[in-house]
Amino acid sequence: MDATHPQRALSVWVGVFYQTIQNDTEGSIPLTDIFPNAGSGMTIDNLRNWADTLPPGQRLVANQIIDKLEDISQGIDPENAIINYKLDKKVSAPFNIILGAQYQFNKHWMLRSELGVFGKRSQFLLNLNYRFNWL
Image 1 (cartoon, rainbow, N blue to C red):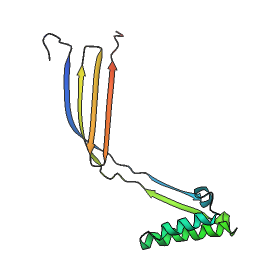
Image 2 (image 1 turned 30 degrees about the vertical axis):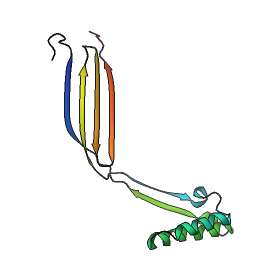
Image 3 (image 1 turned 90 degrees about the vertical axis):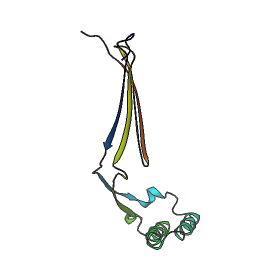
Image 4 (image 1 turned 180 degrees about the horizontal axis):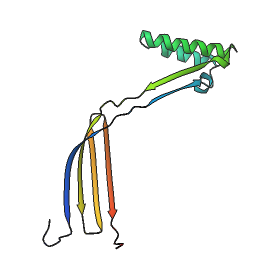
């Protein structure tokens, strides 16, 4: 606190932030929505070349999808060409370190900032606050 400016103040803090997500996403999408030009031989060839670069398990799944795309391009059962999916969402690093500071210029104006850093996740917050004298 500054004796010549008693309303000025600086606050600094360090903390830990924990985040968890317990939300799954599931649904289905027609292959024709993903690959609207599935009928072109060039698309199928490009997808086959791409699938050849995948590991065996992923290649198997990709080739099943490509086979279905070929069926669609030949008019075989296009209504049944649907991918059902389920995503199990999890935070890769649930803990985050928070560094923050707030500076009060006077009894009306304050500037506040927080920085969260850890691993692959980062966040930044900057606030400029004005306090009204209602009473």
